[in-house]
Image (cartoon, rainbow, N blue to C red):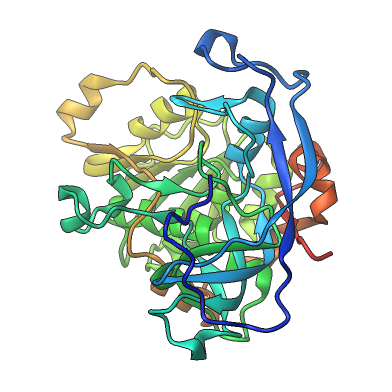
Length: 368
């Protein structure tokens, strides 16, 4: 299923092909329908490069020639297990939602001058009419169509369509890879906003993977004076020390006495969540970002006695302009996260790259 549901109404553009290549995930029938039968890393889910008709932008959409797509943990999870929670891969699905590219064609209601613009894609299509959308919380839209979330196809493709205002123009000083990674940067911005991070704040981040490092950088950009990052892997802690963290801690070290203003979990590990909450000072905030167990035992007494604000995040809203500014101004470095690059025919290798020592962010470049 394409993100576009509008009738074809594109402005004529020469030299566009009639078809494109896409990387398609196919999950065996019945695989992952039940949470207790969600498959494993050894499940023979299939990836293939298929030829499909070129998508046509609707009146208020643009067609983007994809330049780079980051591999997210959710892509890996769909590939290995065929589902994430209630979202089950039942039909062929194109993965990938961290994307950038160049506008190749526009719908009839979009200024043709946008053709040729380099853009970062905000990979979602809210209804814009429900109560959540009307209150600015479009990330909570119950009718959201989100790239690479079944049944909506993602961006491991040569071309994609997106609503024009969710194709955000980026300056030429921003690389294609960094433009694609505005998506996880938006997660970091949303988390830091929810955590109330500001000048002089002390922040603890659990998890030194790509999202944890991004959160640490955003916290510093927001004015945090101390950013503690914890992890079980020393190589990741060493990397975080040079990219946002002011202090690093092995996950085995106690953090109870830190008394931070904000704790942000980017690990999904129940033990890290419990330890992080205990590190929060009275009146502070705890934000859960990492995807882990559905149910986690929490230190309720500490949450109550310290009046700690506890929340989760679900994607983001209204973050792209700030994300682009942070990167363009050099306050957040996304290029440093890129450790592996692959072509469209190498998506399986890209999805497995995270298992390699020193891996942070793998990128798929469809035209490579």
